[in-house]
Length: 184
Image 1 (spheres, rainbow, N blue to C red):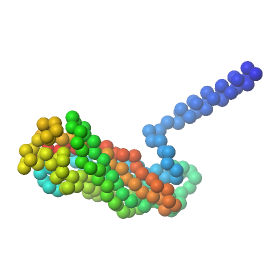
Image 2 (cartoon, rainbow, N blue to C red):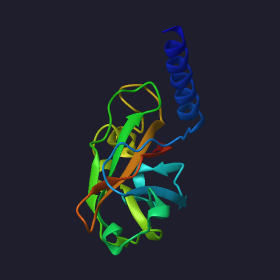
Image 3 (spheres, helix red, strand yellow):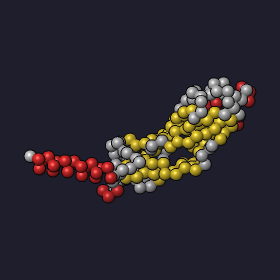
Image 4 (cartoon, helix red, strand yellow):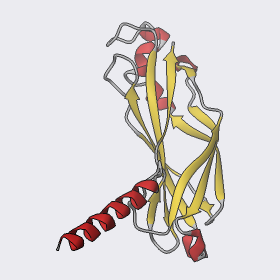
């Protein structure tokens, strides 16, 4: 009996070591055969004036469609039809008020094993710039955040992309994060 316990313990230990040795920063819990990943982005805004009255955009974003098991072969059914993206805001300073999330529809196909590129995607609309808390920074409103007394509002922007494979699996990227300082 002691020998059986020793064998079971050895099997359990080797399984733990084997699983522990296979680590990844990304853990996919979704069903499906592909993973969407933001593989590159360029032209991130780090500082923006709210008094310009225009939108805030990211220059270029590349989304990659990776097969979860490339050794199993791929199919056009793994192509992802891109549907939308969202930007959620949190305060990176002492304030608590945030703009409402931005959700926009997008179009395009990320082929399995390939990429789709988007240029000049809006990450903050003109309407959001004209509403609290960012409207506090308008010169006409005094140029000071009424909550913190600061002439700067720093927001963390979290951006995610959503799509569906041709075979019907919903997929999404992990969020990309970046901070933007808003000034009068």
